[in-house]
Length: 463
Image (cartoon, rainbow, N blue to C red; front, side, top):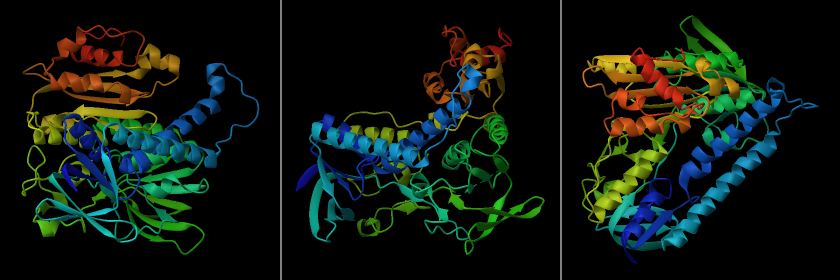
């Protein structure tokens, strides 16, 4: 069957591209070998946020007396019920995407895809039966999977990846989390909050190493306050899983340390799903495990496109979605703007949450920019105090020569809901004064952005 567009993969890149293409009048089909919605909806963004919400509710209930609420009896985190709720939410979101496919008249083809020349795709069903499809345009959106280190092989039982961390049968008494990026930090927070003894091991000098250093240091303080062991400048050299507990030899600046735990979670990044999909047969070029594309995601072979984790850029769901929209709008003859990868928000849903966009202070200085900064702590925020969430701050980076906001870094309660203001400001070249002179509602967490800008200009009121 011939289509205007075939999309391989139904994650946040693939399904969004397919829906936008259908809106633009293209005849579209999506090929998916696993769950509709890809990793994000089924094994990533959505189910992890469900777990984290359960952890937050458990934390609130455990500290109810701080809010003048007395709860009789022991507060118990029912691990099985928490996981069941998470899986149910993921399943419902997947069904939601299936509904959107039907609504937008998008054909769903179930099976494993392999690219062929001349804009053709072979699809093998579960029984190995092959069907051939063709299209004027093909988008590859196959995503990525958990990366394995040679000295930290995952067995799915004692040494696990993010998939297994979402569906453990029982709550582990102890866990070592290797890697403190968003995935590692979120799982470390979740398990630590519900009562697992967690050790977080990070190779870099700071946890969440891609964030501004001030943010990284604050999150480490919050984790340690919550009785989590945080080890930076540390590497897991080897793991012995032969006993009842895993024994990890961790190399630190002070020497080697043996740490025992029931489970080791490897969260050291992801690897792209580009093996065995026919790139060689079609002549599509790759570099360092990524497919090479132009500003509108076309590969070196006309008619073949790639988006999401398999191309260079941040491996984030919202990035993949935007890439998909830009790609299909170009295919449909529109004139979309190329994506500015310097204005991509990043969020980590720990407690406190972390959100950032633009340059960090270190990056701005390294780029030779003259800057000034402002910081407003949530200890001075009325809304944060009322919420019992005083950890964290907002930090802004402003270019001294242009007065433009070039970076914003937040750590605190619900700050992932606040960062969009800074994204819009940076994208539209707004100045610090533009933000300062825009009335922010009081009391809110969001007014801390205005206060941080005020601090940068020496005009802060509430500090």
